[in-house]
Amino acid sequence: MTDKTILRALNGEVLPTPPVWMMRQAGRYLPEYRATRAQAGDFLSLCYTPDLAAEVTLQPIRRYGFDAAILFADILLLPQALGADLWFVTGEGPRLSTTTSAADFAKLKGKDDIHETLAPVYETVGILSRELPRETTLIGFAGAPWTVATYMIAGRGTKDQGPAHALKAEDRETFSKIIDLLTVSTIEYLSKQVEAGAEVVKIFDSWAGSLKGQDFEDFAVEPARKIISEMKARFPGLPIIAFPREAGEGYIGFHEKTGADCVALDNSVTPEWGAANVQISGCVQGNLDPKHMVTGGQALIDETRHVVEAFKNGPHIFNLGHGITPDADPENVALMIETIRNG
Image 1 (cartoon, helix red, strand yellow):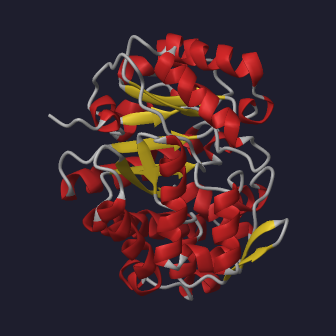
Image 2 (cartoon, rainbow, N blue to C red):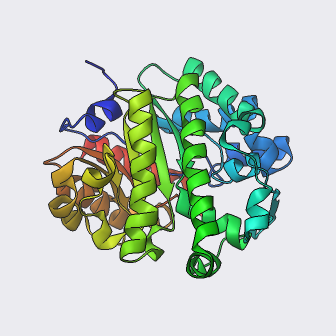
């Protein structure tokens, strides 16, 4: 029996106090992160310098004692490893060379050719598995194929994922090849993270909500099912968290359809809805609105208690409904954790 509370919740145990971690917990809201980022010089250098990536992963654990640490990396490192050009524009975010045709796709590498580029990420995982406190769970992660594909096709983040939807409609063969390559490459990437010491893996499908109807089944559910099935075949007992953000009604049955041990919920659904419709199938994660990390006060305390209360009758990992934002107040994170653990 493990004493790691996250692993217990992922195994279906109902705990008196939910374990807690936060998406983007290693990030710009922390002054110590900003100092390490400055030391690295730029974001990608931070991702690919194992000592520094491990340091920023450890910072929120030292400060807050979260129950889990999540590897510091970026979902776009995988397409870079597949041969896409990747750079970050200050204040605007990532840019990628675009993959929008069969000719572009033909230039990409195969799933077995990613590890040289990603070796520093695996080294970071190894450092963390040695340096994290014994009670802290180490989470590895990757972006889901659909979400990563939207960036590869558009060359940047977009509000409506329009370029990816257009390619899906106009050249479904090439679009499907991109999804399939990302699916098998994600399996290899996550496998190396687990071999290096990750105890849980999470699949982030940040743009799942823009897939509707059969497209949701084909490009959110099915790739997740394939990844989870193969990961569990390779690593029996490995817990896997899936996050099809803004899936709405698509959250219902996501555990069963994909084999995920836990489904993370965004804050567009209420905790009561999540408990009634999703937690009945297994562990859920979420789903405090990240705005409370900015505004704080009694509303933060009240809403934190509300989330805990709504999910108390089933397995639950407390988290935000999306990543913490750079304008968050570190003191509000401490207040959230105190409220969860002390009522």
